[in-house]
Amino acid sequence: MEQYIIKGGSPLVGEVEIGGAKNAALAILAAAIMTDDTVLIDNLPDVNDINVMLEAISGIGATVQRIDRHTVKINGTGIHDLNIEYDYIKKIRASYYLLGALLGKYKRSEVALPGGCNIGSRPIDQHLKGFRALGAEVDIDHGKIVAEAEHLLGTHLYFDVVTVGATINVMMAAAMADGTTIMENVAKEPHVVDVANFLNSMGANIRGAGTDVIKIKGVKSLHKTEYSIIPDQIEAGTFMFAAAATQGDVTVLNVIPKHLEATISKLVDIGCEVEEFDDAVRVVAKRRLKNTQVKTLPYPGYPTDMQPQIGVALALSRGTSTITESIFENRFKYLDELARMGAVIKVEGSSATIEGVERLSGARVSAPDLRAGAALCIAGLAADGITIVDDIVYIQRGYERFEEKLRDIGGLIERVSSEKDIQKFRLKVS
Ligand code: UD1
Image (cartoon, rainbow, N blue to C red; front, side, top):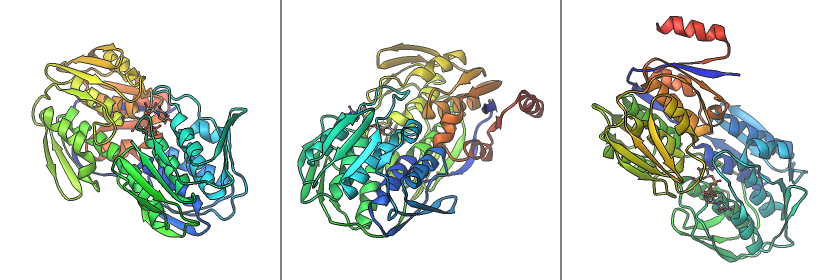
């Protein structure tokens, strides 16, 4: 089992290149099989979740040709199987995007029901509601969702909750339905817009992505395209909070500052200096951070995927802060780990009260999920002494070369897999 070992206490300083958005890429890879032409996708992050999605696509018969680490060619002509195996869905929830993609293209798909995830219960009722509204028959059969339609027909649909997954999934199916679909109360996240742009570049007719209402005129077929995925706002935000928590000075490169507004606003609230450039953002933390209140909300609100990262910064700030998690109910598990490093935290329901402390001290902690895992690494980099983070497989699902990028800005962090490696690191940093 691999772990990260970290020697904290030094500010992170320098520049970090941000990769393509994982969550946009997962949906775009699924959508890429909706044409029989070859699609070229660039700025793909090289992370485990993406590799699993590529395996799932080739598992059903699509051709996947890796051009380089961040570029892939996909051709969906050879798809012979409309059934996504349990193994894939178990590894990445986002393989449910193949439900919408296959239903749109072939009017039939079968995907194993996604299992529970560790950030809270994650229902898919809104995905199914959307497919049904398009005229598909949707059944749950032996643990599988089977969606089928003679014809998909455009519809007028109102989502009961704002959901990224359902917005994208139903948008994909509707892109190849007969007639016009209007979806209201949709998610406005940058990756919803990116998937719409990608589909439009293949000949779909989708308008309004990024607003509350998306209008889709169905088309008969989609065609080839070459597409570059947007930068990952969560990876960028993670490094920005790493700068804040370590009293550092970090510039994230290759970002769209507009996508980072909620994150930037909170960094300014807690006393950081933030400088925006065309495609870069610099975060400087010169003095001890200040307390604040934060509530996670759908975009353009503060992202739930950035909640643990701000939690770490607030644990080190002056005064009392509160965090309210309004998207997923089980996203505070990292706070128990943080408490083991000396943070003073009280959780009640969906709110956490944090009394800032002057220092955290290194401890052995374990990553409860992807973003919380990254946040615990930030805590380790800010803390006195040595921190060991277990279960880093979560972090590898969504961050490319995480420890290398941190090392490039002065982080003392290494991936280790044995007691000997740990001793070697201790000797090196002592
Ligand atoms: C996506 C992201 C995840 C991020 C989340 C919110 C991917 C692969 N994952 O997850 O990193 O944290 O958006 O920005 O892109 N809900 C329902 N019924 C549904 C679907 C969702 O009630 O059918 C609820 C969920 O329980 C949650 C809320 O809607 O409370 C938002 O979920 P959603 O936006 O769908 O998240 P995901 O797409 O799963």
